[in-house]
Length: 365
Image (cartoon, rainbow, N blue to C red; front, side, top):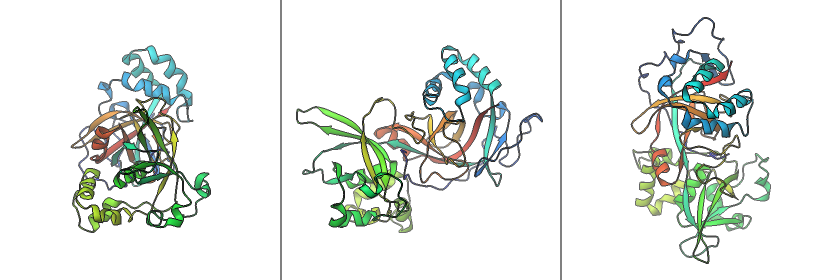
């Protein structure tokens, strides 16, 4: 689980882009032979024709085929029946792959029970920070392993809050630090993103980079620090870059606003097997930048192959993606969090993404 506590945001209402079907009425191009709408959990999926997917005919398929192959390394029921063909078509061209997809898969437009098909896209990333294995001058902000009572992940009993963990010596005495950071804002970023990478400078002068992954939480509710700052009229830009600027300008007051979010995340160290990929998502598959999304699993099964369409100031996409992750803030029928990648550049993009979203699930016929 790599996006355990990311920030929830509210959708922006924008007109439906040209070429999209009505939010509440199936496209007129849907043939009578199409299957009936399905209702998986909190969403309704309405069968449509391939021509209803914006940009489908022009989308290159080669960039996503490697993602599909990795998805089949830990296949879910949603894609298990497709994996033999996915492997066979790894040496095919785009025309052959497109023909196979159109004959083997049925697009379903995802919508809420109300009929609304416009949802919300946000983004997340894997941060990278310098760290120390021991507490030392300049590195005094701890990242903790979970206490024994939370380590198994089976407990749902609320534990101490973020403020109590930060301020009570008796609580901190029960915790084991995994690493030390230089900035409490960096620690908050890791708590929100749920995973990251740490760079340790070794005694011989070399640098070691390790993964840091979600291990457990204190079972407290997540509350958005950005929302707290907005409610206090401290800022008008609640994007993560805007929040970070406020923290830099208000170091004395920053801690009190961090405490408005009582949720606290504990970590475990993990090797980085494939540096070009992100951490494993909830499906157990390493995330791929701009191709992996986090979803509400009540709406979309893990492993599902999907078509994503979005248009915003910072991002315009119409492409295949895989539902490979989830997060406590990713709730709703048409809701996705796009994995933007690793490092500062990915973080700068992820912090700005908050825009309308349309999704189609591609189901085996």
